Image (cartoon, rainbow, N blue to C red; front, side):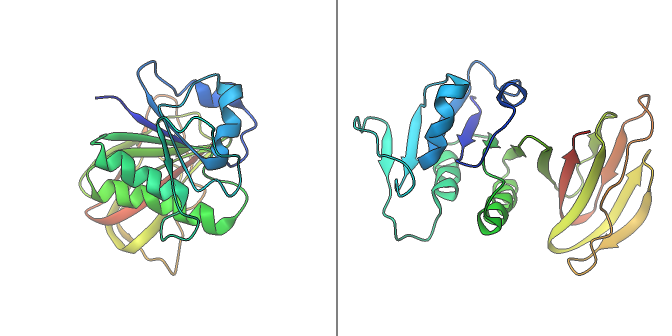
Length: 209
């Protein structure tokens, strides 16, 4: 099954870095002013979605979904839902963080929506990778990241275990009120850090050096 790439309109500085994540058979959805990135990636959209309040509407409306300006979903969230509707199992969101914090948070929470729909998803930008850690799934973090952080974005995360890191945890709990899982480190190139939790969801943010 092809992977769904959703490209938003936030700033991208290092196109070559981002493009290393792309695969030949990816399905590309450009959201509104995300179309400004098309010339830099040199990849044609398979689908364009937007209300075009921040970018000129394409003259050719083939493979274009035009949204009303007044709506519940942002263009990016609509694109995520459209990818779910089209039965994609894997998602990569690009150009969806940076600038307005309200949009940033809304887009980051779309990872939780995708996780709860049993989808695999990641947000990447010039500085970070972000994905959701689900209960009872062992997550490995490779050496080479400057930091990794675990953020609770849904209720209370319980039964958290971290191994092979600078700061390990054993059957710990992180609440939204006290986010102490920030700026951890993988210590050795010989051993991946490992994260496991029993209840709740955690946002894993890996920060580049």
